[in-house]
Image (cartoon, rainbow, N blue to C red; front, side):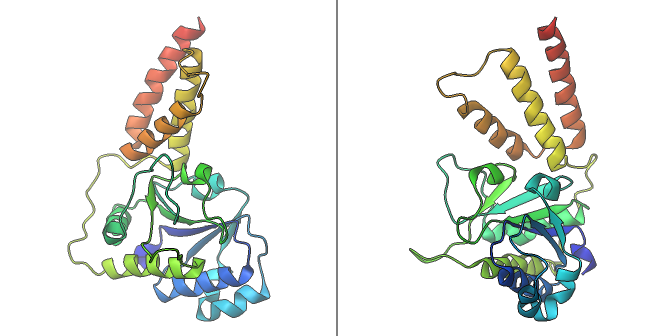
Length: 241
């Protein structure tokens, strides 16, 4: 579907090629065709093709990346799916709001990526930290969804909401920042904080993690990123004199 041309489903380090095929089939059934694979164990694969069935066209146009930064670098909104809660909670997106939020972003011409982790361990903390929101799909106690089932649920929620008559782009003055621009801002903040000797040396990772969460939650646009980096550059110059 044309409305989904800026929507990517990203599979990170998928270990079984059959699961890639099953995910492609699930995506195709809801008209979502952009599949990005980050360091898959095996691809292309005959087993993936067999499991994809009508979703073979998704596999044919699938793109393979060496790391997650390359896959999501141009995306404006990134949602990481994971069944595990974290000791430092990430901004959450509820399944009930998923379809509406994503379709509104797509109506604004944003590039959106939904990230799914490895079948055995899911997304690690570092990869989830690159996402703007954390999505958990509720399941009964002591159970979890397999990869293709999670993809199917997410794809269905997006597809179902795409028929809503009140989806209108918000006519933003400035486009949202991309993932790469946000990552550069975070790196710049960390550089300046190191110059200020701001970090608690007993727990140096605590502040960067919380700053990353704050930056992702704010959903900054490109102009705001530029202003903040300009301020940081001036401060950096003063500190280096």
